[in-house]
Every structure is written in structure tokens, then in C-alpha cells.
Image 1 (tube, rainbow, N blue to C red):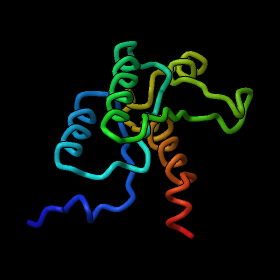
Image 2 (image 1 turned 135 degrees about the horizontal axis):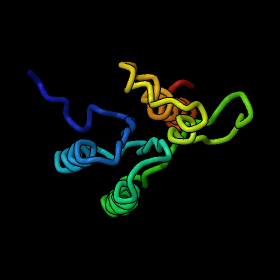
Image 3 (image 1 turned 180 degrees about the vertical axis):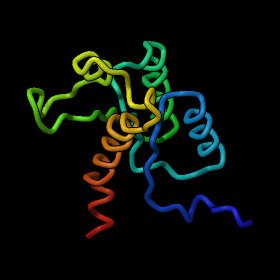
Length: 134
């Protein structure tokens, strides 16, 4: 199998989860000489551990020192209801609804809502994406 070479990548984005796996993947990309991504996104549920937030800040500074962009935090913004237009954390929503995250019931809705949707929206409106579409 042929490996993709760094100069074949073009414009790309990094969805940085803030944990061990995404940190290791980012370090490996840097070690292999991949070009800097157009942006690095961290989707915040509002309930990460303090150590995770510290790590995101630290690795963001390290990315910048390596010539990569700083990590941009993105969040799910409620579209309707009493909190329309505001960030509501996963924990806050669970408390308001008196229910556990959907994973507790065998679903993945919370991951989609608090992680995938904010990153998709940020990628979709990023200048690099808009330039590629044009």
C-alpha cells in the first residue's frame, strides 16, 4: 500500500480531541513532516476534566511553536428553546432534562451534537473551505 506523502495532502483540518490518541496522532503527523493544517479544532462539551483543558492549552502553544495554528475551541450552540443562540454544556442539558447522555441508552447523539456538529460547522465556514469551494 502506498503511503500518502505530506505534499499530497493539500488543505486539511485536525479534529483534536484533547486526549492521548489525538495528541499522539498530531505528534506523528508533525514527525512525518505533514504540512500545517488549515485549523485545529477542539470540540468542548463543557464538562472536560481540568487537566484536559490544561493539556489543550499546552499543546496549542506547542503547535504554534511548531508552525501549526493554535487550537480553536468550538462548541455546540443551541438553536431553539430558552437557550437559543447560547452554549449549553452536555452536563447542563442532562441536568435540565433529568437524563443521562444518550450513550447510556446505547446511542451516540451527544457525540454528534457536542463534538461532530461544532467541528463540521467550523470546517464549513473556514476561509480555507470557502476558498476551495470557490
